[in-house]
Image (cartoon, rainbow, N blue to C red; front, top):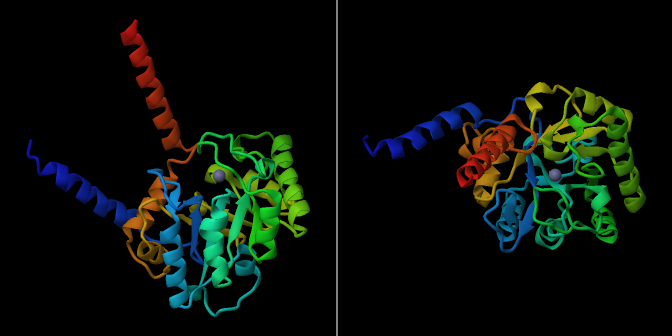
Length: 293
Ligand SMILES: [Zn+2]
């Protein structure tokens, strides 16, 4: 076999991936980014992001006279001119590491973000399998972030995959989380980010009934026409500040980093690709066990 195939194949599939997935969703009215963990010394983990790149990005946003706003602000007010001048910065999970590594950089310029907290883990370590026991913001940190004008949204009470829940449990997750976070901030919780990006129309209708007005969508925005929905692209471990900016320009055509965000989102827990990979791992383990016998 010609060894050139090992160079040509990724190159050609990269071009195809970029052309097919590398554009903003037609549903995106205001560009948005999603972060999880922000660390001075990030590990080789796709959900980790470097604090120095984050702050460089914020400086660049300031130089270009763009304004990060909260989701409620984006939906309810129309300052700062057109949506080309505004952007959304969101954080899922409400982890403690974002406080000094990201929120402080935003506060320097009075920029606002939306932080989606898992109310049942306030001030505790995460217990689900995405992270290695990471500490969540405590109540006084959440209150102080909210007092600085950032929006506190819900990421449910226990980080449950909402599409799998019976109606009673779904209502419990949405209602408890809203109540706990409202008690902490003294403000109405209007927005939600669905854990693992997992939602369907039943989940959204129930959230609306429970008083939520807006949702950030990491996946599935192509099937939504709801004005309360805001698509966000994940900030990847290897994105530079310039790549983040490229993702935030609605005029960007065919960006490899937009394509990568969309493709990576399909590997979140509960997606068909995640299930395929999990089944593949189980099969490998079974084969190993059989060989030992
Ligand atoms: Zn999450």
